Length: 304
Image (tube, rainbow, N blue to C red; front, side, top):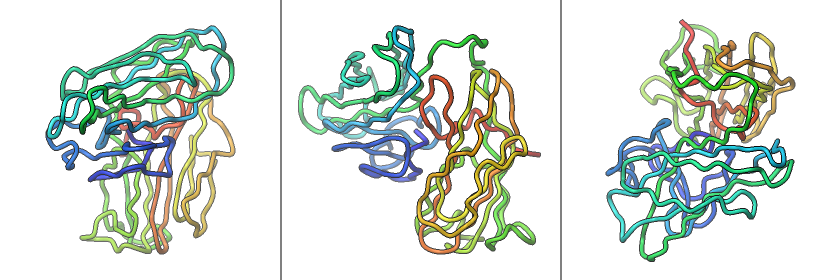
């Protein structure tokens, strides 16, 4: 659940990502007070949680009336504190797509196929029903909405591990690197902290992420960054985001879209600097059948 922030503990109703949280819903990192009894999240370091009657939703667009789509996700009951069990109902706009009860505290796959009722935009919503009352929670991750495509089916063998990240103890990516590591995703909210307090201060640092991204299906891809402070983004060597300035949390949509075929890899480079105050850096994409999301680890491959 990467496009709603990055949290090593947990947070109710986080803001700033593609998902909108209501009631007792939020994001929890692995091994937090919420998830310490559960396996790790299937898609990364965190999952959404629906406690009680909390809900999460996201706007989706590009539907074609009468065309068949498939929604899939992974869900688990909370292991370390549960009065009874949690049940989830999924809505597309006002249309219920079904009720789902995760059978255990291990993440299990669920899916539903449906015909889009109308063309255009609507919302996708997951709602906690908590049918028996008490304190009950379910976790959600790896949510995917897939429509028809003339391209080959997405490869199930995506094996990405993330992007090469080179951190500098200055704002202009100059001199010797202070830290080189593999970042599984570009989905960070450091707040007033540091990417690594052992080598970097909380302010006046910069980072360059490099590698390739792999298209899961064919179509037109839109890229967006969210940053505080400066950001630049290149896809296949073309600069499509250039907001190299001090600013608060800001979404920047790429000035160009990119057409990719299923399985095609494209070069990606993103640069970021932090001057003062909060620090946030995120990289999103959307494509046919997929609403805006943080680019998953398995679709990112590091530069040498």
